[in-house]
Length: 186
Image (cartoon, rainbow, N blue to C red; front, side, top):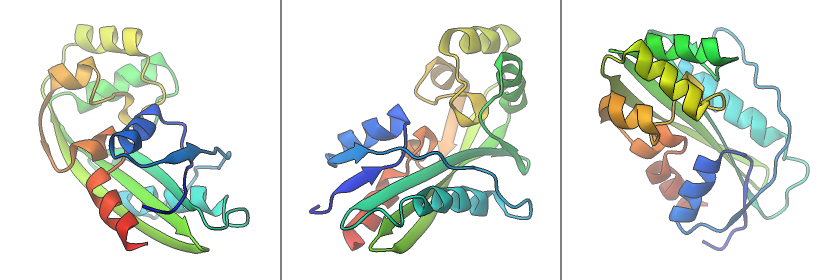
């Protein structure tokens, strides 16, 4: 890959995934309002926010590819974003306990003032979690920067996830398989 990549994300998980893919990048952050129109589907929301993040760079990039992403958790068409506080994180995990939910990541590649967007969906099946397991996880890992209040690579994911239909890396925060193929097209 000969293009310079700008990752517009402070997520250490996305940064680690790109490193594991042997992609050279540097991080540039811009504040973006992550609100969205209410009538959008969960998939459309993830792509809409990823594109909104990319638009913040449209006037300033030249030959770089700007990579933006947004991951949401959806259970029964209810979007679970990042928790507001400890009680909210516990409530979200109680909602996910014993159920299947979707993790949807929207990705936008901005290159030469063109937006190339896509998304991936993974189904995640949680076992029943006790309140003690949930509270202990929230207290120890403080998952306040994670959609749905959990990281699949952390203890709650290791003890609570029964199975996944779809991409593991999508659940981490970046669908690397699709991303690689899309980057090769640019």
